[in-house]
Image (cartoon, rainbow, N blue to C red; front, side):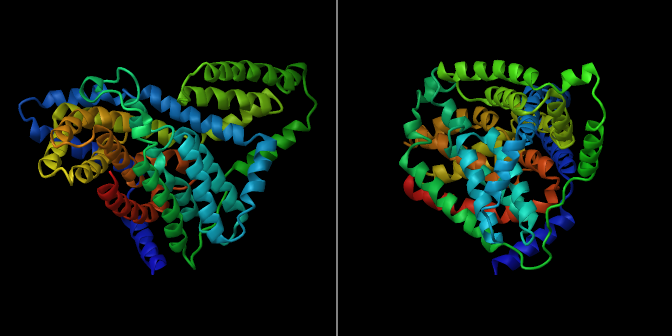
Length: 441
């Protein structure tokens, strides 16, 4: 039954869902039109907000690009690649492939969502190579699905923010330890419930026919053949330096020593640390700088959608804040809530806002100052309010094209290929989380 429903959703999405760039442009125009209607006396303010915000997340965009590229380059190290191949080979049947891919990706998401983007994509690709009867789009959806769990993990944007001294809402809600947010019993129960049931749902959606197998990106094999032919030529003195292993080992050691020193001295594991660790490890373990550069070049071909589309969502976030639209959505949902239903409405609101403004930190800056005092007036624990927003932010990541770009860039698929499965998963996650949140928080 679920297989037929999933197939129906998948075929419908492939037919009617436009490309992710088209979605980003349409969402920009939609939000801009609503903002102009809400602010008819100051139209240029909305255009200025969009233009000023368009490049606001440029540093974050570059961080994401480097997470993907350095992770892919590290995965191309011969012994790491062989290790991934061995682990991926443990999944012998299609159902094992879906479940195993989900669990590996979920473990990575719990540790750090930036790391998980690369791990999930590469693992799905390796599993897909070895399982001819596995439907590759569903396998990629399985690798992406644990994005709905990241808010309960060690890199939870909101959970870590409210635990930071002098955070921007500290005067209102105080500093809330992680024992009351990401490590609280209700959060752990919801996390385990989703982690157990989501792979079951994924396995039940597996199609029995019209299986789409993994296909390597066009031109990759040709590039490998050209590289092999070039390596047969005698090396000049300059080329011998390019192919010397000691240069990469030396430079990689410098970076790894820095990373180790910073972590030992209490530095948080953020995107900058992950990027430098991946980059340094790649330099250290690749056989030469020439091999490292070649792997980096091959990785670059997958990253263009990220570079192109991230700024559009930054502009949308800026319009939401300047127009009052984001606050209007939150105010409306809050107005109809009671003490018993406040967290549910907060969760749903966060899910809606996340579709328009897909950034955990940015969403908390927009929603926190409104939701926290409203909840406190009703007697709701502010720690629970923070987690309701965090769960909502993670929930609709499943249907927000913004966060699919990195993983799709690695595996060579389009948004239409996986979104039908992600929509069904988002329905399941929304129902399970809403019910458990009502009874547990």
